Length: 311
Image (cartoon, rainbow, N blue to C red; front, top):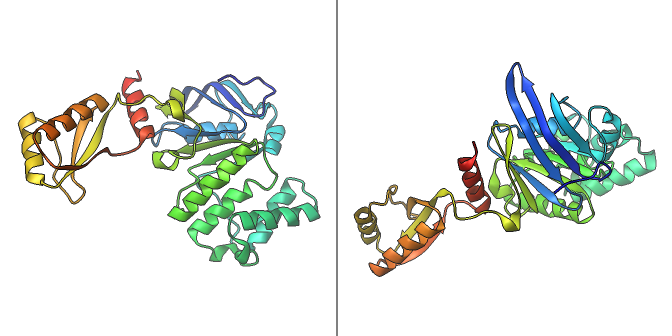
């Protein structure tokens, strides 16, 4: 996918950034289009946060080309900030002010007039399920409530581009579902949403597109519906009504396995074809298999495959 300079999305090509001679980002390419949620996937230390800081105008890259909402974060930082919302993985909160005052303060910083500030703060508090806490000090909110407040703070000026670094950190399961619905709603309205996470389950049902990064480089860029599957070594979990018979067949076939537990027995297999062959063997041996499934989702399998093939 290629974005033109005037497009409202994100176009980062060949981005490089080092710290004290250590390369954090080594020629990374990331593109995100309006109307989509793009996941930035990689382990800790892959360069995800460094790239987001460059996109958010908070770090100057050593090289490469970057456009956010059609503007260069280095030469046009004000134009980018006016069109971009940024929610880092760790952010400070003014705990002595109320939740309403907190949002109205940031709305004022973006130049919203008094009447619009009040309307925007009220709408965002309702959107974050914090309406009943509007006039309470931020310091009394729970961790999850503070996380939601920090997220909607990035939306006060209705940005065209939204950058989120580990947004689900600290959220309970219900809040994670609501976060997913909120981001999908924003994407449907035409917002460019870029979400960074190393927890792949957070992105499994959220992202339209995923960019895989590892060791400071892009190693894959795919639509979620077209992820490469079945090529990586990955764990599978087998549960049988007769655990002893299951272990006997696995040992006879030379399949490495873990210790049996209440959820079953874990084995590591080289892709879907090997899994199919093993299941057929178990059925032929009349082992009563109750469950046979991969441990982890398709994003995890694709990432393991891509990083295994990366130079």
